[in-house]
Image 1 (cartoon, rainbow, N blue to C red):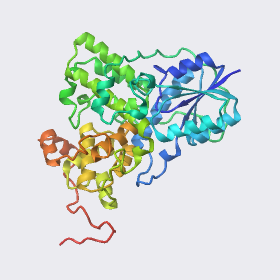
Image 2: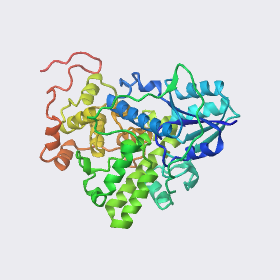
Image 3: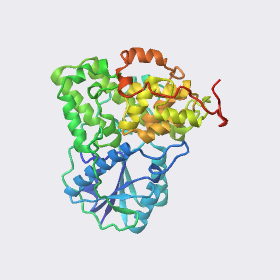
Length: 438
């Protein structure tokens, strides 16, 4: 009897899920496990506190949804409180697992865990699929380690590649053995916060996909994508993409149908353009590994940022001398979401106006964002800081000009109380000595 193990991660769905189809064909029994990494619950080296309540709630909803879908297929979703390596090691030491199924993840820790498992358990067949990306590795016209240094070159090389059609939902799965460990237990549904901006899970993801493409909004996307607020001013697919309850291929398929029915234009192309940016950072993380998290980034150019505890705290709280930044940060803290333009503005402020090491900002976004994705988040922060993929060497935004262009009537600032802040930015210096007003 063959026993398989599916390691779920940022792929909490049953449709367009090749590894479920593989398992249904290959094995007689199947363990489905999600590793709720301990570092999501404890403070980090960057003064952050693990997942925000918004991000945790969104994740719980995604787990609720996929657990219910698996139950309908006669399966069980087990959730481990251990890190991935120890979770898989425990299961493989206790159960005669012959197959592991996993979607390729760009994160360094995730890939190292799987590499260690492959070394420790050489008799286990590990099957890697590509459910988190538009393209499979073999489709890329270059080796991942030779990823182009700029997005523009990457886009020119890949934008005409054929993208596979999404797979339908799997119809049946092998049964689960009765797994009993103190730290690995069957998922139990959690209370739902009805006030949250986003609802996690595949059902909500498919609803947003259908709702968006049933309107004319895709035809004007490029005109409104830089708006700081408003549900209809962007696709809002990113949280479900990051969770994996929606696949990039599903979006591209719906986009193709829309263009066939209502016509293609620059705005509809720009939706694909944004998917390609996400794709670039997926492979960017795979290519650069630990360099994604180093202060000098992939450019190996030393960034001059330091750490001022008080300034960082005020930036996180939305309590800086810059009302537009304050509004963006308060929006993030309350909803777990911020527009792409807002993220660029907030990042530029932290790095260039406040002089803080960019990694603290990236870590705070990791804590807060319901659409956190390791490649997109850390790659974009490197881009703004000038230590990543930007050929211009960084992006410093004129905050006054950004305000005049994107919030000329200060409606966004007023909505989020961005004009409320301490008049004095620093009450202590970098060495924590008091600074007294002159």
